[in-house]
Image 1 (cartoon, rainbow, N blue to C red):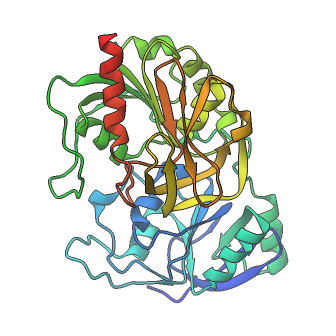
Image 2 (image 1 turned 30 degrees about the horizontal axis):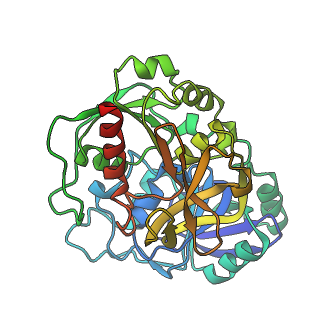
Length: 377
């Protein structure tokens, strides 16, 4: 790894110098911090991070390298990457390459050797900040101007950027070594159309594990095209950007309510909430990490969850036909809801984790149970 220099500048005027640990060039995006201690590869390959620069709060990143099978999509999606110290020499029998080499291969502009604690506190205190990382520009005034001119995620339909070009089937389930506690479902698989707003591979594995025959479709797929697959269920995936800007998906899901059971996660939760009459807003600094406590109001159980979202559903906007089902215990934001009469529910967090705890993996079984109950009725 070279000693090439890099700089990160925030729109509030802060400029820090560090070391380049990825691709050469410049990148811009909303700066978000992630509190997970591991799982950096899954984070970087999560399409939900499109439009965002990821700052890791854990100080040492990259010590176990990169294992290609751990990627949550076919490429890195984060605009940039910021860490306190990167490990250039991986120590793991599973490692295929060192993290800096992978970042360079994936075209991710990245920096280490900066005060990540300071940057995290700035985001917490001032809210979402646009930033630029550069290996080519060292002028503070120029860098700050670029950060201020950067395009944030507000009002952007990034789901249409990261989604698949055409429908495809998914058959892969968890590997045998996967540490899940949820038993696989036997019996005839249920056809499920999964809307790809930025879907993660572990979501697809979770659906297959719980007995679904999955067909993934592009984000803007009209309702009639989704129904042409003759599904027993509809799944709405995670994804990046502003949920209110994903207009084609909002129109499609509006036409699916009451026709098929629906389960939404993250951006899918937000889109479903909008369709059902609620409103969303951008959070000051969002939830990004693997340690967020959530109470399931229906059971009283508290689960530690994996989260990655910058927008949230406003609780006071929930109409009477929607029931709040999950609540974040850190800030009391909406983490889940269900329709009181139609067969649909959603959660803001990630029950499939990757990375993170699997406390909420049972929700995929809850989805299966709902679909089977609807079929009987």
